[in-house]
Length: 179
Image (cartoon, rainbow, N blue to C red; front, side, top):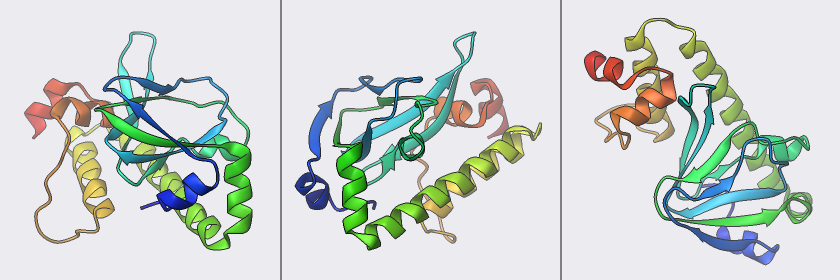
């Protein structure tokens, strides 16, 4: 869980409903808001010249997305859209930073979230250069399991084979065959 919903709303956050496939922000748009999911699922993705999608991240209830460019006054490197009907809180950048200044505990938590995202992205980049699909897929699944804080036991993977393929940079046929 990221920041408490009541705190976000008290600092000027606005809840907005996004139907499935609705764009939340687009690649190369200047980052102006903090986003946190109340319900539903959101993906951030990039497209190459041939239209192949690479999913940068899938985010669910209670998680934030798109923060790194907000902190460095950059444009979004990816597009974010609702994978299913979603409710998202949008908090303007200035209010977000003022809130962080007033809540050191939330500021520290945000630093941990950003560090986790940077670490996960570095691991993903390392995995994508690995040519063995079984290693890419295993690392993706292990990472998901670790994020659920379940190192032991079975975990239901909520991704389709196509979504796994898009996350690890493989064709769906390769994912099917490898699994």
